[in-house]
Image (cartoon, one colour):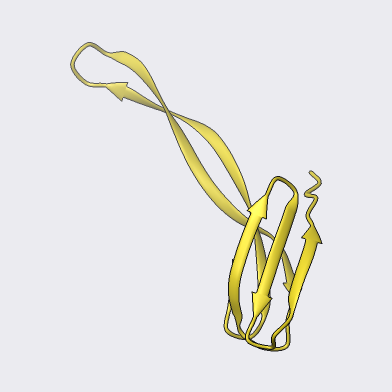
Length: 78
């Protein structure tokens, strides 16, 4: 979860894919875990810049320079 100076909230999804690389010394196959982030959702959360974000499980709390604090329940499908 990230935010910007225009009050937008960006929800990111972490995707892991296995990457195989051939080990040159013994011709062994080694596996590495590759992490990629994709944008899942954008929300106009506040009228002014986001100044704070906190998460706990599926709950997100956002605060901004518009003097408003909001509590969000986040679910990602797919």
